[in-house]
Image (tube, rainbow, N blue to C red; front, side, top):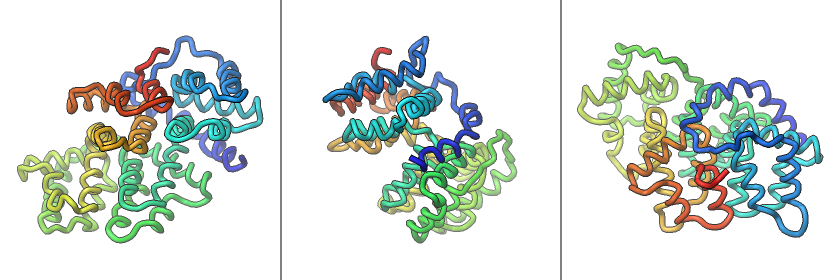
Length: 342
């Protein structure tokens, strides 16, 4: 409880800045009722959902599945002030399995959520490297900074030290500067630099020096518009998309991580579309990946990801989710996807 309250205090200072960083709501799938019920009413209804012998999952979904991050944060704070219990702990007691994980991740403040996912990823190997890279490369500089601060508050250590401790070799060489980065967020681009660094990247890749310091420096420090300009020049000058040149060995996990890094930095919606498609199209749904994509992108660009999914698969994302999932987990996913009625 103490750690949670400290985390709240640690993150309050960045609340206004975070809200300003959100992409316009037209790219969000979240549907919020108008007018929004008073927060005290939401808390009272959630308390009722937990009362008695059974849990009213539909009531939980109808509230939390239709509130934005600021509203969910206020619900959590008001619930604690009113009932003396962290809403996350109440949800943890009442829910289970994939539905529980989705609701808990969704209810967390975005920075806390990223900290939780990153910490979870440091304890695994290979595929978790993608999650660390994803957080580092698809968040704004401030969002990544707030996630690192939330990590301090929640785990009493830094994300950087855990990444350094739990990774080795070329993976550590790439991931550590990525999670430590604070990129310039402006639109300015230096075309002369783009040409120079495109040639440098091509030179290193031609020599198969995939973990070269200069290659990693460019990917880990340059602004996203600058990287985009560099990669556009790479394609114009050398006739190939850089990711095609990074497919020398399709089974090489480090090359796969490099390709994902590039995609996240310049075309993140395509990265997340593929993550969702692979999660659903596998023999047996990858609920962990599907939950992460929906929970982390719903208020940012999930509508774009869903459009890209339909373009690639000729099936709407919500229909694919409904076909591949069941029960309360399915209902919550569809609520966040904006599929059900408010």
